Image 1: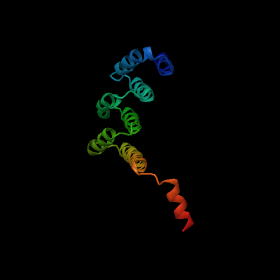
Image 2: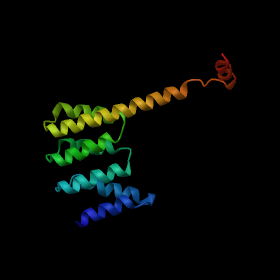
Image 3: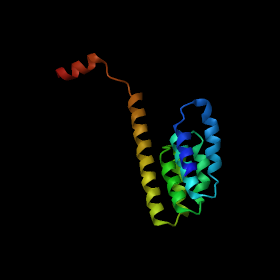
Image 4: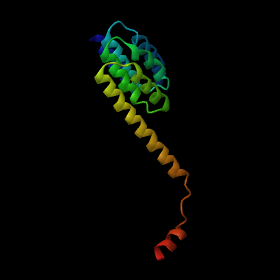
Length: 141
């Protein structure tokens, strides 16, 4: 229980100079013999949003504990990047647990929806905006 409380303190620390120390500690816990510590480390690393999280999470997709794999799948799903999408698609090739397959598919759909929305927003921003005089002429017709 002390470790879990310590994880909470690490994630709540706002001082940027401590983030690297927190990150190193949490990454070390990813290889802990305790599934609970691995799960907590994944959750906290996800919450801290380090850009290299995918590389740290991916090896745990082969973890023997299905609860660890579940948390990793959820965490990768929140990254919302094409790389995360590709990683989750590869999970479908090897995962045998029906619940984890379902969770993987759900997270894949979530990433796809997010990426489509981002693409649509980008296209919208790239479209030239009509001039005010053009819109007044259109209304007059």
